[in-house]
Length: 109
Image (cartoon, rainbow, N blue to C red; front, side, top):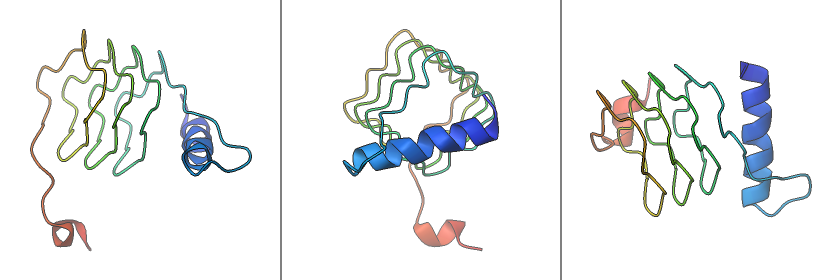
């Protein structure tokens, strides 16, 4: 999936979360998101079944209640990601960082 398509999916998902016109739940099932930068993205309730998120940067990403069945997270950074209520089985987590998110000041430039 190219960056423009991903940004459009995220934009529509944000509208969906806000119950605004033109919004739709993100369907990223089977998407190739290898190495994607999803820093603090809001993917609450999104469908990511069997997506490839190997090496992705998901620091602080909201994945609450997301469908993550079969997702490949090898080498991804999920530090501080919110996985509460997520469906997370049959996935690959080898080498995945699951450290807690540090203080917000740590990331300010």
